[in-house]
Amino acid sequence: MSKLNNFRRYNPLIDEWIIVAVNRINRPWQGAKTEKSENSEKNSDDVTSSTTINPLAPGGVRSSGVKNDDYLSTFVFENDFPSFTEFDGCAGEEENSDLFKQQEVRGVCRVICYHPDSQKTLALMSLEEIRTVINLWHQQYVELCPKYDWVQIFENRGAVVGCSNMHPHGQLWASNYLPSIPQKKHDSQKKYFEKHGKVMLVDYLDQEMAKNERIIMRNEHWTWLVPYWAFWPFETMLLPNRHVARFTDLMETEKQSLSAILRDLLIKYDNIFECSFPYMMGWSGAPTGTYLETDCSFWQLHLSFFPPLLRSATVPKFLAGYEVFAEKQRDISPEVAAATLRGIDGVHYSRK
Image (cartoon, rainbow, N blue to C red; front, side, top):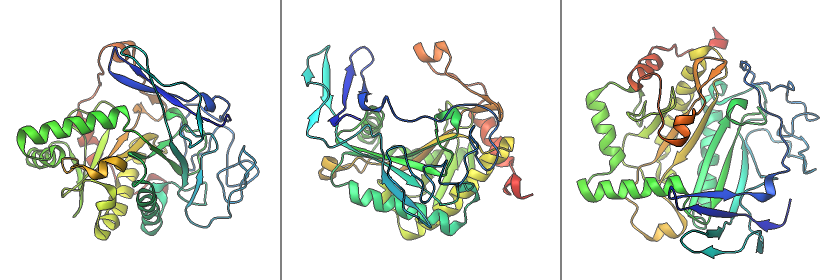
């Protein structure tokens, strides 16, 4: 990998930026197939906890030659092929015209292993084990928020969404700028607050509770629902029941009840088609870094799930031509998706 930072380029036609990660082209790849994934989430090479074939397992040797700690719980390490780095130089020169705009990007990328057992998923972990993962997320935010404008914790689960290793893990990318989608969320929530005097997603949750059409599950501190505007077939959002701008603002009781509802919702996902349900998951909260000095109280923390499966464990939804070039569309209503998820058994199919 080159010892130069990557860059991002601006697309003036659609008002969006794209990261050009020239140093990741040689990263290893073990995906991707769309066969039904069993509960153990084995990939096409039957990856198990053996350190000889699983670079994420305790004591495993990664492609960089670095050996993992013999960890017994969670484990974090710097991504061997990061998009964001803190090198002295950049792979591209700065440009700043209306049509050619390019910026250096800096930051860190980390891998977060949830558990030493490659056969486990969040849905199959104990509440204590999930709470350990949540505590680790909190620690990472506390460490990186003062320096970086955006800290993105996310998970790609399943080969169909690009996961190249089925060991239970997520990732963290922290950047010195606010990316395109968080920037849109920032602007939209600010505009809504200025117009209505209310926090958008707090107001939205209140109205969803009154309608009671798309609520799936709720506990003392969290509500799980299908957004009115959902695109993915079983797309959902998890919201705090009170106003919480950032993950670091969560109380201990809220983190504990997050463990419970997170496991419950992932069990329901797995039970839809009795498979280890693939998804893209990501936290969004008020930006950090330089934004810590500004008023971001119009933000509301939320966790989004974008699962691609539509009709069965082997039939994912792909973006069609019209969706790529014009506008997204979905095949089942959010109300039907919510009703389906509400009716799913709460006991994991593998334990019946």
